[in-house]
Length: 116
Image (cartoon, rainbow, N blue to C red):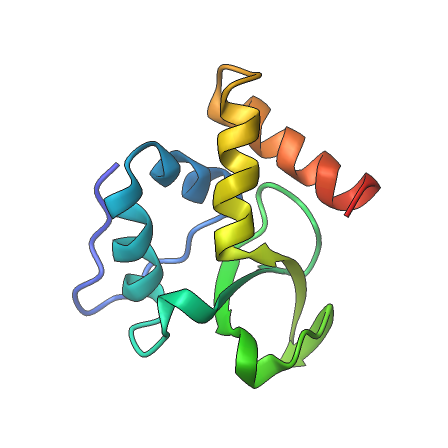
């Protein structure tokens, strides 16, 4: 997948973002493409509107949002999924158990809803 972030910032849902985890260099490129001023080491992953694999993702600086599980910005609701580093670890765990990006994304979402 080749994302173009030149002038028009593209939105991306969780399922699309999961595909980037196959090539770790893509993760940083995508995160900084969507949020250019973000310190990637402090990135928290949020989903817009609801916890759903098709929800758009947004990244926030963990130090600035102080661990909020839900927040509203400019009239949009965002729900915390995981810190980016934790999402990477969870991805690696599920990538060894299931085969497709869809299965991995669904497993991550199930873990977030039921266990996290």
